[in-house]
Every structure is written in structure tokens, then in C-alpha cells.
Length: 172
Image (cartoon, rainbow, N blue to C red):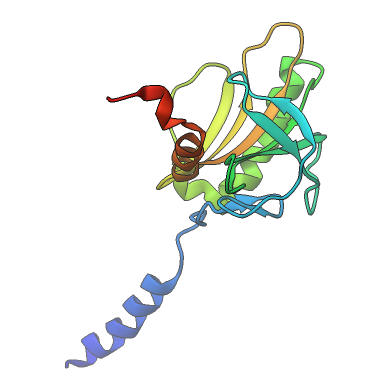
């Protein structure tokens, strides 16, 4: 090996071992892991699809968010989604300001997974494989909510499979 190559090989190996800025794997948040077990029983609301949201206490609450919940699979009680939200930020401008503050922090950890998906309302999405994080100020009428949601497509598939009563489908 030439002297130049001997010098470059250790440098290249070092650079390859350094993780990319903002590329942490999305596994969960707020002290809770997607796919982890959940034993809580207090329902604090339902999704628009009537899926129960169970209350939990985060290890470290986030600024301006005062409600915390998880969606779980109905039989095995595995965590499908993790939610944190505020029912009313007071104004669209206040919601957007807080969303941008979260974005700065989340970019440092997950910026390598930032998505450019086009949706309605103000939002930021980070997606890696089957897991994603959505920070959202949805278009609303009357209140200005802010949502932070961690979700797993694999866990959602499990939730749906545990929810289906195959006898309802007869001989398909």
C-alpha cells in the first residue's frame, strides 16, 4: 500500500463511522417506545375513527403541550402511536411559532429524515422506514390545536389485524 493510501484508509473509516447529522432512528418519544407494551386504562379521548387514546405521563413534558396519550393494539396492548397536544394555542400565529420551535429541536435529532410531503395546515414530518413523527397545526375552525404524533406503520397493521373479526367477512 502506498503512503497516501495508508493515510486515507483510516480517515475514510472514521468518516463512515460518524452518524449523519439529524439521522437518529425514530423509535418513539416522551419516554415511550413504539411497539412497547402499555398497561394504562384511562381513556382521554378518541380519534376521528373512534380509536381510543389512553392517557400517560411523559418522562419530561414538552413546552405548551398539556395532553399526552397513546393508541394501542386492542389485544396485545402494543403502542401504535404516541400523541402530545394542546387543545388551543390561542392563535394560528402562536401555533406556528411553537411548531417552528419544535422543528428546530427535532431537526437536530431527525433532520436527516425530514419529509417534503405536502399537506394541509402548518406541519413538519420526519419519516424513517415505517416510523414517522408529525408536528402539526391543522386547519381548524374555532380553536388552534398543536399536535405532536409519533407513529409506526407496522404497529398500525398489527392494530388493524387485532381489530378485525374474520367471522364478519364470511367466505371471502
